[in-house]
Amino acid sequence: MTYAWDIRARVQSEGGAHVQEDSCGHYGPNAWIIDGATALLEPLNLPSASDPQWLAQLLSMKFAQASARTGEHQRGSAQPDDSGVRGVLARALEEIDHEATALVGNEKVRFPSAAVSVAQLNSSGVEIASLADCTVVARMPDGETLLIRAELADSRIPPEATAQARLRLLQQDRELRNTPGRLWVARREPEAADHAHVVQIGRPELLVMASDGAWRAVDLGLVSGPGEFLDRSRNTLDALGLLHELRMHQQRIGEVADDATILTLAPQA
Image (cartoon, rainbow, N blue to C red; front, side, top):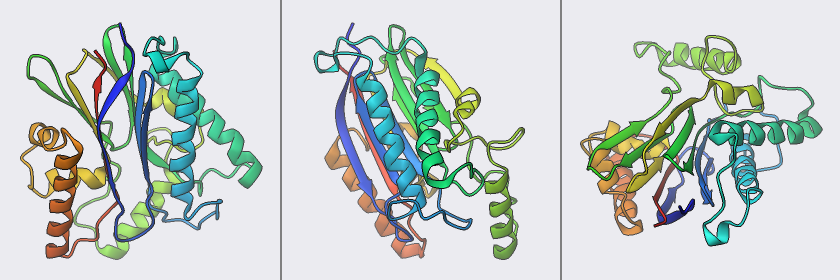
């Protein structure tokens, strides 16, 4: 069996409030999407245009390196890592922690964080690990559409909170992330992988990975739900059209656009 992905679309659109802080990629049996969380605490001034961009780009590189270590992916024959997708995520975060120590010591609270989903092909289909609110949509051979997501990042903030109260609550939420009973995200703690939402599904016909900025097309009613989102992300031209429509609608309603990323893949035959 082949354990590698064919890419159908990889489309990114930078938002209106900051530099691009999304990342995505695939290598061998693994594919991933990363959505850096907008900085709300005092920055650490890591060596990039923003702290979340530094994390998103470095974490993407660590996933690629982990995939490269598993074998000869150029022939699509490499077996997935024995530790599964949770192990891939844990080792990438461990390497982030090692690099972070040289730059900022033991600082964790102000360290940038990200939502992430990692999908790994295996003999049973695809294993997916998610932290926070990147979204994965899979179209199965029988036509069923599956949606996989861990937890909306800001779901614990009361929607009726004033702007000032919301900012304070968001800051508190960032300070308490990756602690018992709170939201777990990709930051620098390898143990976050133990708290990831992990599911095993069969071998899909098509898989779409989306950051929450791209998923606004669903939130705003431009598409009816996961099935139509997948249908409109099947190839590069369609995905570009969807993000263009989203940006035009956000401009009309005065919404500050977030970074948006769509990665569409199919298992190699």
